[in-house]
Length: 423
Image (cartoon, rainbow, N blue to C red; front, top):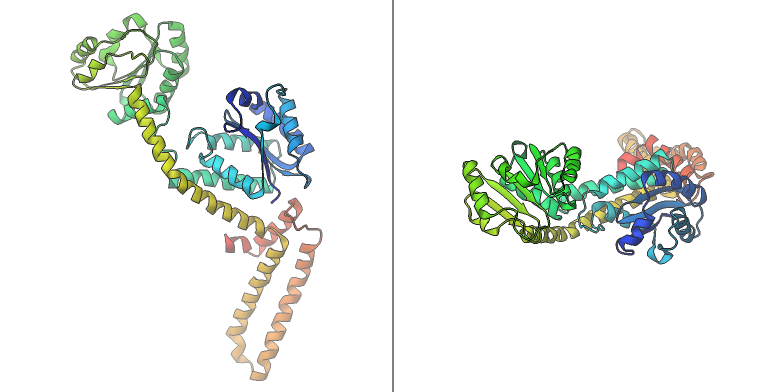
């Protein structure tokens, strides 16, 4: 198969290089027609924070890698930082296998990354809209998405939080099964606080309250996530009304002491209070963990949870590789079936089976002397029926499955039920 992958990822280049060769959706729309015009019959460009890769069927048999890399670099005007050495090039089955590993999440920087499938679907949709997708890449990516789905449903490669922000929300969910009935107070407006709030919102938290020393920053996040804001100097008064506290601020001393939390517990009639202290140095007095119905977790607890989850995901990698191998085999069976000679052989076999079956049912109606003639006559009829379509199929088609050959073979396989029969 003349498929080629040319790309750069987190293994071959650091972030300051990858960000210079990252393509937005608009940039992808602009470069895809150029890539197709110069180098590919079909192509898809995937660009995320961890990789930029082109999957395509080259116009010529010769290696197009250098020209493609030159275009990717020059289009972004990033030649002062991005070099040819940062790129890799994979062909045929290695390119297909790589795509399947990417979509399953085992090639991601964060093992089992759940975002990659949606990112790849968006990239494929963009290529489809720009009409740079053909029958081969369509089938290739359709199979790839099936690999991604199987990896998620048949293994636990994406299970368990592997980020601090998501681990915080996962722990919250263990204490309060239905977050929709509870209120969370997010203290701080840094990246971790924002991500945690977004994860809480995605889990349908009942109410989000933000507080920060710089109120404007809290208001900006609250506006985005449909939350409310309280003054940092008076957030202690709100403790009686919240069930979850996520704290992530830089402070030399505790912003919440055990005594303050003890007081809040009395006002909230000792209902459970879940606290995640992501701050370093710690924001919450660790003595608070001794108070009844106060569940306090710090950054170490979250990191331990993340380590366990990553270990579990690593143990799932062999299962995912088995899925990749199975789907790779299926894809190649499909690809080989698109070549002319295997299809002709399948067609002949199908007709011969029909002939043999009909002869067997009716052969006893003939005399012994005529039975041999029946065999010869029916074989001759079948050969004559197949002669013209086989000649027409061979004319103008290539040994390699190009667009025209795929169309002809696909139509024939559909008409005679060969596709359904095998797959």
